[in-house]
Image 1 (spheres, rainbow, N blue to C red):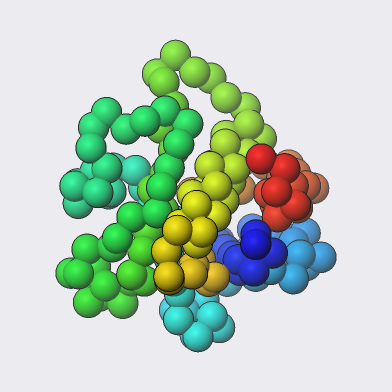
Image 2: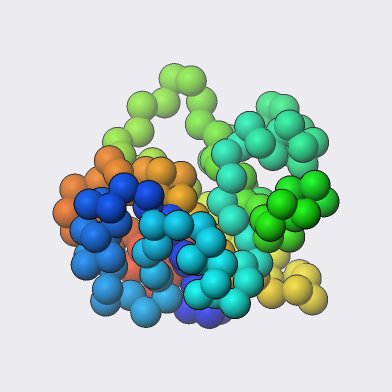
Length: 161
């Protein structure tokens, strides 16, 4: 169930963090932090984190060319886990070079495909991802206008994908 996934949004810019925190306050499953370590502490231990697609490709978790408009949950390399990262990662979503998506469409694509990937993983694995960290930049939240982030996240949590 999507409502059992808690997102810990990491926004290091204090002003943007404050704005996101106010905007997303109505979503009990989403909390904004300025530091990754604070998200780890608040969650009691993260299960997964959004990572750049290129990181997953460098680890060998995603083979090039990456599938367009899709992502999946991948195992975090042991050396990353040893540095305090969670055991799983959700890589970014590839688009074609010809595509020109608006900030809203880009954020929706990443949210939709990431929630699908988490849902598939949770349905097929004995391990359930519940606490997921996401850098605000990974979602493109810095490019959205006021009110757009809560609308997109609310839709994602309602399973509108």
